[in-house]
Image (tube, rainbow over all chains, first blue to last red; front, side, top):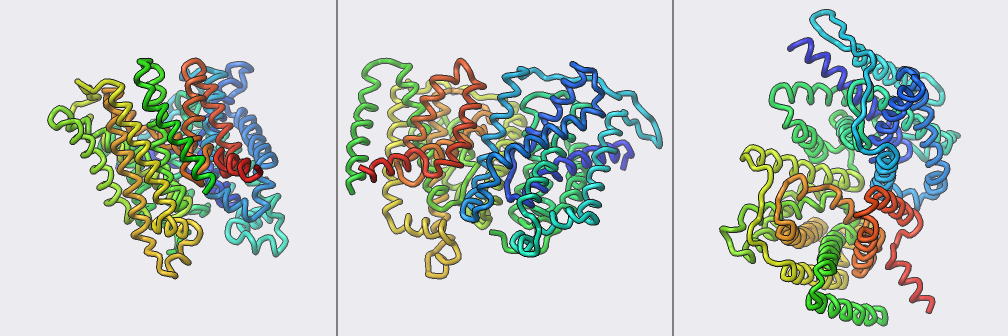
Length: 292
Length: 302
């Protein structure tokens, strides 16, 4: 196994884990399948690009701008759209079934607003692209930063869920929503904060992506798909397994493509996706449960 | 009963107008009517499975794509009618094969699974075509627009009649029972698996043929285009905007969609997509029964 390939797999895996983490948090607590998640990654990427081009703000600081902007967007759509709907059980149930299509609408709006404002031209910038060599690996600075920030955020989130009181209530809402409300968890507040965190994480992932590759208004969809593959692998709403699955996908993709060819990438990803949904819909690590 | 007869009269008037249209010789209008009939056929066939059972499919385009591919492969060596029949057959058989495992999966899992499956098939066919050294296939000697239009119109009418028939049949009641509560339906003896499979296959045959006719209209096959996921999303959007509680919903949805696209698509494509997204969100949140639900309410008040 080549060390260079291993590094590539780790970088890809950390990004997938981070993007999927946001999606999984939102699905777990609000039961909304956010197919616009990848478009938030795109928004984060554009924030980074414009902050650097207009104000010369280094992307590492844009992380905070993108997090605030995407988190704020989450707050706006939660307060404006979902709060009332989720409070009524009958409406909430209908919403879960339709959420994917609803977010498709959000996705289309985001993509086309950005395309309208900034055109569909691919954009990019150079940042930390000097190459470091150690232990037989050549790694550019931006990839190292991507890996470091993504890993830190994933671990930080896990620690937060494990040790912080709010993290406990978040987990309680994911696992037993009704029971959480009974023992005094403010479900509304947990949902609001979680959607902000989930969206903010997507924005941060976008900044990280824009450091390493070109960006377009339509770049988000592949990230949405990868994130869906990851959370399906880990089991919907299972945060820790989702992070593990993100790295697993990074490895499967990197080594799969290295062993065959880049043209098989899509078949590999969708094949994995369909295979897991058909054979183990509760996820690779999940207990056998009857899904609705 | 009163609404049914009103619908019947409206349907006959609409059909008469649609049949007279080619005589005017205005190809532009016939082209629009062709698109309209195509979307009616696709959305109506989608509603037989997805609106009736609540198994929302986001991969309906896969059957169109399979149909188009079959026609692309067989045209020239088979008569066109046989080619189109083959397209419908291939779509139906694929539905039969994938139906059993896929229909076990429910709720949001079913939605993302159908989407993933359609993309998987698309990518496999793209690979096969690349492997064969075919990046696109041109279709020669496609029939003129007027005849294609009449075939598409026939498909739209056939699937609408079938949708009305299914809704009032024992099959339809069984499908609705599945939507409301699958366990309860199974417990009182509704053969849920068989009914779901029948609906899945029935809903697949028409888009197979539609895909074939679409191909003849564009006279150009490219896998990424024939299996474009935007088609699946458009179908769902039309069903939601039109309302899928009755057979007229998909017709209303297709009308709204085609009208909007004629007004905006060519000049302001991004604006068109943004308006589509806004409409989709507004209808899901505030008009869950769609345009046809609004009409029902108006009729009930009178």
